[in-house]
Image (tube, rainbow, N blue to C red; front, side):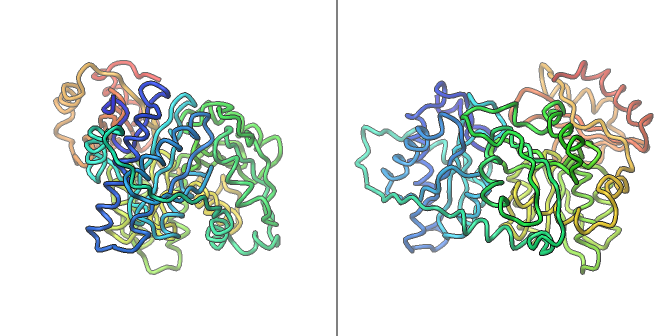
Length: 463
């Protein structure tokens, strides 16, 4: 049963089968053993090296899973600081603020409310995923037996860090917005997820922000699917932006570590295009620096970085790889097509709240409307990510290679090809039996021609 709940980047499954309180205890015990061991390897012997931060989201199953997880952590001899019902990025902050051995957020992110899981982080909120410790947590969890454990009685403390979190975040917000000198009207759709808790607590008293809330109530379920990559989920916020004449809108996913933008016309903005705007603004007048983007991103991202004197760093898809690239290159910003944005001033982690601040700063500093600013980066035509269900991933990738092999450019993550007037990446999903395809061209005709050729090989898209 343990094997069914471990994914590439975290623990995630339907509650109560296969994920339940018994497994939560096992994972808690295993996580504590692993994180304390890693802290000891780093030379940490202080009490905080045996302390683990735990937070949870608003799902109905989260309190019980949190309690079982915490008991497992304590039975392994670690102390727990419970920070309550918080967004995932809050846990990243708390780990660093308290200098703990790591932390766990009880959440299933954008999945439906029947799912739940655990996002595990180590020292300085470094992710524990495949290749960075999750396999060892899985091994330890499989052998953890509550009947044979003599509880070591690690301590438990509840702590409210919202004031500290708010102060930490708002130091990055433009002073004109903080003071009310400049005002922004913003529609925020939280889909009844953790954005509805975080936004009022962090931004509710900012003088220059008029927040128009959608789905801020927390019922344990979602108002609609909290996945910003499904276009129809953005219908409500798009309509509200136009109705209220807002400066822009944002949409948070279930645990609020992702944030997507809607411009003042009600158009949803691709996260790579938004990242290009962020990079362009960051590099104006600066001395360069590294910026990390995932390989699915529009070619415009690399072009903007290099044109402004920055160093473009391409990364594999996934927060484990993005965060590692940020650390390795001391990068200022990172951006993923999925809506995860990473900030050096947020410990190199992804944060929906920090992304919201970045968007506010961009909009208030611009001399034009957001749609006009963003138009400068819409140079190419893209399909977005398209999924194909295939019988055998390896065979399907080989079939694509047979046709396009002479145009292959990279195998960083899946395979990338450059056809001249169009280019694409095709890779296996880390979580489902799917191939994920992103095609971009110099114009719509080139994009569509390439997509048609690939579709002849892979079949009919799904979803």
